[in-house]
Image 1: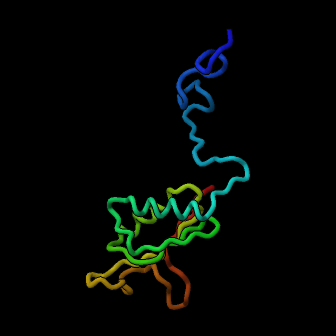
Image 2: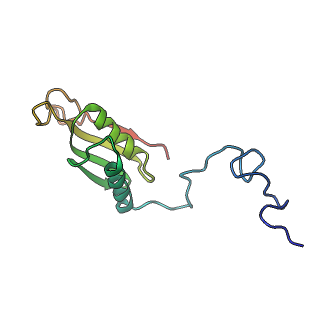
Length: 136
């Protein structure tokens, strides 16, 4: 008789365990088909969903733009922790190559803090925002 998936035809043990299909314990997450690139629209939708779904982040004043896998965050948040949380949330989205975090931290009065947050643009016009590139 023929052997099914659970037989001795080369697939033994559970997926991801030693001796199973592929390398033992090696993750292949994010390694898609050759030539595949996730569209900017899909990335933007995923980023917006993740920002909206984060219980600890008020994303109502955050705008998101995506170009060639590079995500730019603009707007205001309540704290530096929220600024970092937004960036971390975006960084983990599939297809994101780079995050440019231009978010400003509001001061206590509700306006954007121009003196306390160094994520804006310097006097010379050079951006000083925290940016991270993802290894692909």
